[in-house]
Amino acid sequence: MSASASSAAERRRRFHQLHRSGCFVIPNPWDEGSARYLQALGFQALATTSSGFAWSRGCPDGGPSREAVLAHLRSLVDATDLPLNADFQGGFAHEPAGVAESVRLAVETGVAGLSIEDSTGDIAKPLYEMEDAAARMRAARKAIDAAGGDTLLVGRAECFLVGRPDIDETIARLQAYASAGADCLYAPGIRSPEHIRRVVESVAPKPVNLLVGYPSALSVADIAALGVRRISVGGALARAAWGGFMRAAKMLAEQGRFDGFADAAPHDTLESLTRVPPGDLPIRGL
Image 1: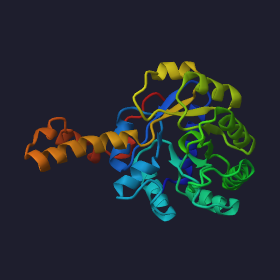
Image 2: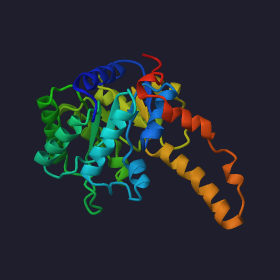
Image 3: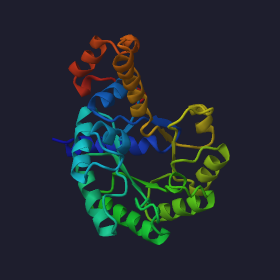
């Protein structure tokens, strides 16, 4: 079963509170075990990663069905006591009515927030027209409001990820999504302090999420100083885990050597995470 109505409401309340001031890191687990470890480290909220989940299922990013993603959301909601933001891709529909239905189902899993992006999946026309994208966002907003209104809605402008790195278009889209009801704005792919600062200033006072899925000269403190409210890492933690697994497996297959196990997590550490009920894991900083 997913989180009860009362626990879902409490997580959503805490999630909204995190977005009101300061800057927090919202890392992206890809399964129950990684979610529980991140809670044990003291993170205050988590976000799913569509790519990390897909790779764990042997699928490309975007490959799992809506039903599989909803089941994944329920399992991660149950795995910890932290607010969970769903990487809900494009809402699993093109038309606003379909987006609204998907969002309704996502809210029922107990997630504290969810994002809707404006990419189409069509290489020839990678982004929805701004008017259509805003209509999809309004539909998501109405679905959330009909369910009680406390699930945080994130509007994503995918320009920089689909080969249209135009900061002016990105800002115009984010402003349209803010007007359509998005609570938090997100432009994955922006990296320069100038672009980050412009986005923050253009949608203020609404909070901005920044994706940092790559080695960066900017620290969390640097990003906070630019006015960013939250920092996510997308599939980076999943890719880091895959990197260690692939190195060890290739060494075993190609060299017949076991050196790749040198940095493996201790068995007892992993066992201890699975023995502790979610409610007994620490939630620091609250």
